[in-house]
Picture 1 (cartoon, rainbow, N blue to C red):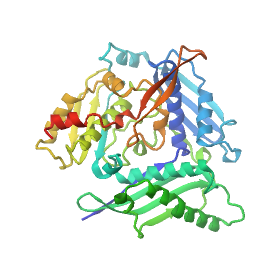
Picture 2 (picture 1 turned 90 degrees about the horizontal axis):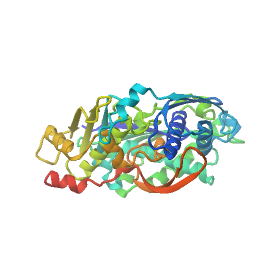
Picture 3 (picture 1 turned 60 degrees about the vertical axis):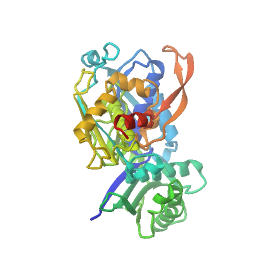
Picture 4 (picture 1 turned 30 degrees about the horizontal axis):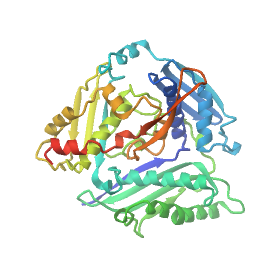
Length: 423
């Protein structure tokens, strides 16, 4: 018998995602000036106010209040009617120095850098979106696409001119009894909007629903191969702004805090999540770096054909470099004649999972993190781009350097895995 599975996403203007982006922007600015910065920054946003807190150890100086305003401005909170606006909102910083007890565990000899905390991290991949190169669950892929396209529409200012920054999406997919997507069952889009002049609330809602159906959904379908766009049949259910009016939104409608959208950040509820948030944390925190490494392993395993679905867990003890455990689960979908324990042992031999090795493999001391803080950390396109690195703590501009963004999405271990597993 088939089943239904649902995932959600939120826009870059959602309060929790604003907080994530500010935290990661502060991390990036510190790394531009001091790549050895140890950072754990939390942000809270509410009506007219940003509160910054956390622990930092660095040789750099950054105007964190100005960084917060820059992010808020980029997202689109530039209108006083939103009751949260880049130039006028208050900003309070209570960031202090990282504990020396933690620092001594992570600042060790090259290669022996210990994990910044204990914990378990998960990576997941599935072949159901292999055609798009995502290797991600289809519901969360579609949910992210709706938010990405809605943001583009808002910035293009050609259609749906009433859009405001806050939005959420949710997608339910019907699967058959072999775990293959059968059809899109339900789409939920909630988008903040202006008061639409000369229209009643009921007429405004009809207009928004019409635009979602005839502008937004076709844009998402256009991004998909025929096999996946064909899952949008005429019988799907569409809910748009189910409560009716959505004018009050953003931090004025709901307080936002860093780290509250960890399922949106990863696999939409498929697989597993270790419980640690990502944003605002430098790569010595294995909550972040080892989650990226686990995803990299899982994606390359599925792309190599070792299994059609893979969950990888890595666990650490604070201050210890080597992981205390590596676990692999293939859901009975392995394409090799090895049990999951034997597969895990091979993975442990193939991949160096010490924190320092992970940092070097993915270039995690560069300022690459603000881009991860909206629309998911996993399933994104690997890309290279230039970043500006600064000399010292002053205003002296250093050099531009080309770095990898989303390097954990590279399929660079496929051939090595095939060889190791005899494929």
